Image (cartoon, rainbow, N blue to C red; front, top):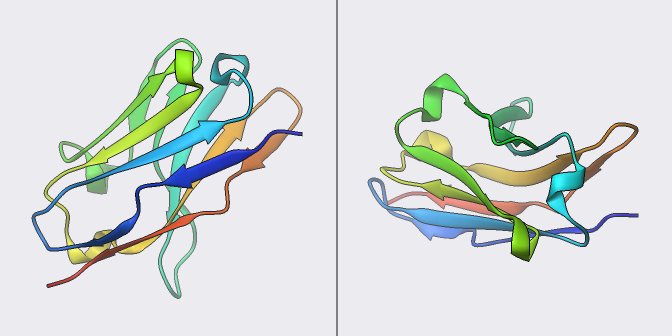
Amino acid sequence: QVQLVESGGGLVQPGGSLRLSCAASRSILRFNRMGWYRQAPGKERELVADISNVGSVNYADSVKGRFTISREAAKNTVYLQMNNMKPEDTAVYSCLASGLVSDYWGQGTQVTVSS
């Protein structure tokens, strides 16, 4: 079993920044990809950004140029740096570790963008 623990969520004003962290209980390089997803009230969960085990990154159009996904393999941790945040970024953000056989999810962290 793999545990993923997210942290770094909270309340931020429009235009502000937050950095989310996802700490895994084993090497993140053993997964095909690590990703950040979000789900706003009344909406479906959507991919925000992901990074493959070889370092290829992918972003949702709505966050390109504002969010950056990165990883620190030595700490088994993936980050999501969120800049120039907008009210529409408000959601529960969850971390995904996608392996060959199974996917693992974290518990999620609330991000609220409001003045």
